[in-house]
Image (cartoon, rainbow, N blue to C red; front, side, top):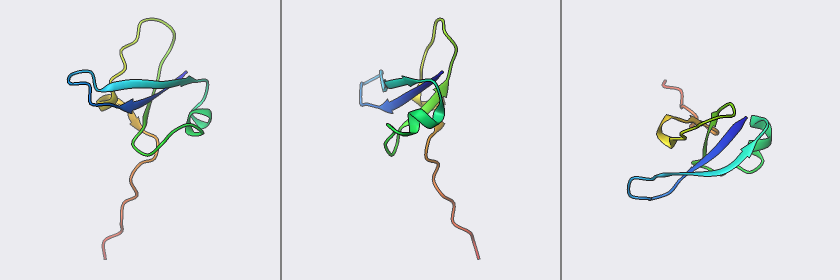
Amino acid sequence: MIALLTWIDGFGHDTEVKGIFPTLEEAKKYAEKGDKYTEFDFGLVNFEIYEANEIYPAKKKKKR
């Protein structure tokens, strides 16, 4: 399962779960810039946006 996460200024609670999806491709349909994702199995979970993966990683420029 994929948890789509977004950042909020929660003063200590900065992660909000935007949605739960079966695949990363499905999650990308609802993702916005700055959102992140994490994979998980059923059971107890603790989602932390600072430990999650970028959905749209920044493109690196080539140095000349």
